[in-house]
Image 1 (cartoon, helix red, strand yellow):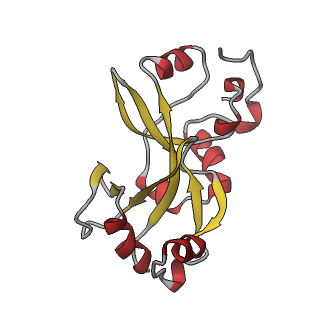
Image 2 (cartoon, one colour; image 1 turned 180 degrees about the vertical axis):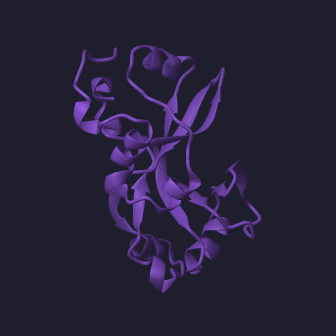
Length: 170
């Protein structure tokens, strides 16, 4: 929501990966970095499939911006955690190498993550800083970065044009 006031999360859609008494962790899935998968492959000396070369790398959040997280739909990758039906999370270069080389796997690569301390996210939600809804693997893996935020709101029955800036969350 606009009143959050943190530029890291302006018009962000965050996929929550973990939420417990110790805090929360998620990935922003709609903020493209000025970096492509081809750039990533060159920097890491990895083979990138031709059809994947121009795909964007995403800014998953401000915490540990050098750390990579891969959301994908490949059940053949050994190192993975099921996030939801049709969506896995992998965090090792052993998983990234084959995923980059495959043209037939849907994936979204994020650098960094979003983190909240104990009860911080709950506090921000009671202040009206966040809306929440069920995630969709298709939207995460196929959604256009520029449209995911508005599409998510519309799917919730919220008109993005009707959101107004309220008081900031402190």
